[in-house]
Image (cartoon, rainbow, N blue to C red; front, side):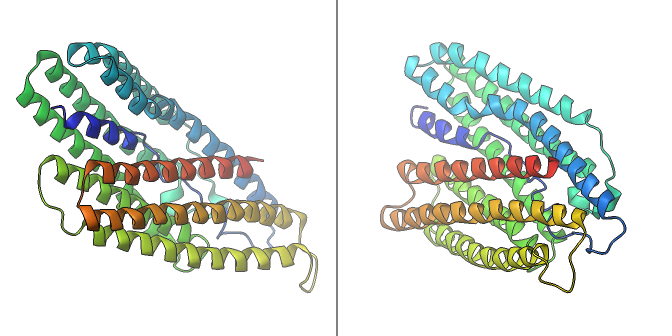
Length: 347
């Protein structure tokens, strides 16, 4: 069991459920400048942003508790083996489960307006966003339950049960990532290819698939199974993420330039004040997402380095830990970007 303990610390890097939020909701659907509904549209965009803030606040109940799991596990492991580590970590696990339950309860009581003026795609409607987040929380809850099973085995000193529980723990982590990857793929299906809506969702879809691949490498490692394609797969993910960034930045620069020209009145006439407010919000959101592509470039660099190390030395724990840590860092950046976009829309 000793060789599994550090890997479980790695696994807990993946425990925080970060749903695919509505980062593209206010970008590709701006009403035309001469629309009679511009004021309603602007008001609904603000209301939608305020709703997303409430969604984020509900998510934060669980995220805040789950974020600290890895550090708490390390502290418990350092304090002692067996029952002593379990005694220290079990209350932490119980608190995390309680916070997941509280987040789920808050989400299920959120209002779900239609926002009919915004022409939202199905995956961005409040009811669907709530469903997606609850699904991720359910997967996180299952992971915590499996962790509790492992703690019980450690407490009893049952080595065989510990190993079986640890294997199931990694499988639960893969299910959690698979759930988020599927959600990202679903969002991609509703985004128009080549638009400013498309590339942020494409980035998230590829990002979660890369994290899933790294997590699967850990699962194969603890089972002692070969993983001959890992280096090639990591490099393929890195190259794809880099290319998404190149294309995404190009589209964002062209679109923000066009909108800035419209605001400056470079067309045939000045546009409505409500249209200006809409476009200014959209430009700010796109600038945030441009920064996200830069962060993704750094993540791709870690994947390439990891691919080179794995190619030379094979998949080892010390080779996989930086990949999952980089995944966690970019996932946190995605969450911060989404929260900031929601605040901008809510203004």
